Length: 343
Figure (cartoon, rainbow, N blue to C red):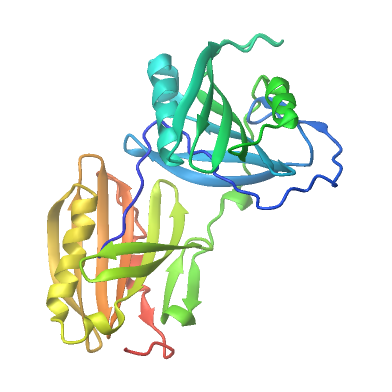
């Protein structure tokens, strides 16, 4: 039982959105939206929502900013990722190819068509670009992917597979580049607020640098399928993760040391890493292990506990040779709550 991390080197993660009902009766006031800090403009039917996520790549992390709006059963989005010096010095054709393949893999889609394009709208900004169509089992994707000055842009139209959208054509044709004016974040906006976040339903509390994102996923093991819930918060290039998985009746009669050792082995193998150090732990009467592991590009500091039938993993993932100063702070903050019931 282990936590896996998706690695998408120099590839932009695409949005895979499905809208079950068409809103044909709804009217939209199309307007031109522009972002000086991200260097683009495009027409949207409504004010786009901005979301930010962190992507791993080549031992570093990059912020992906996605601007998304809906038009009936169509999703329109512009995603922006600045690769900095690596993007400027890298082979542009290879970067675009990697990004395209990463997008296809991310949504389990296959390529339908592809052509090289160049955005020539004024002001003239040097760029390389490709336009491609792709399909998954349920969705169709029309994409313009552009690399300019180390920044990767992805303008994308997502529709149900058998539909095509005139709004999508309008959106893609409206996308153009602007001179970038990097935004300067205020110290207040960048401040992190370490504090405990209790999760009674999962029976634990831990301190994070910011409100953690909660995700659920089913994982398959030799003992069957189990739901894993993860709580993820970022600080700089490091991720602070708590993961919870209840083995239920499957854990009864099993050796706790074996279950913990299997979880540790899974975490190390998933990172394609080697064990650097480990020691046995106890949290009250519950057994656990603390360990560190290194891969070619990443470092992992973790503690794993088995409380009754529930496996808890506390993980700090960071670039190799750059563990965050708050590693111990995070790991030491883990507590079981009175709501925890050993099953």
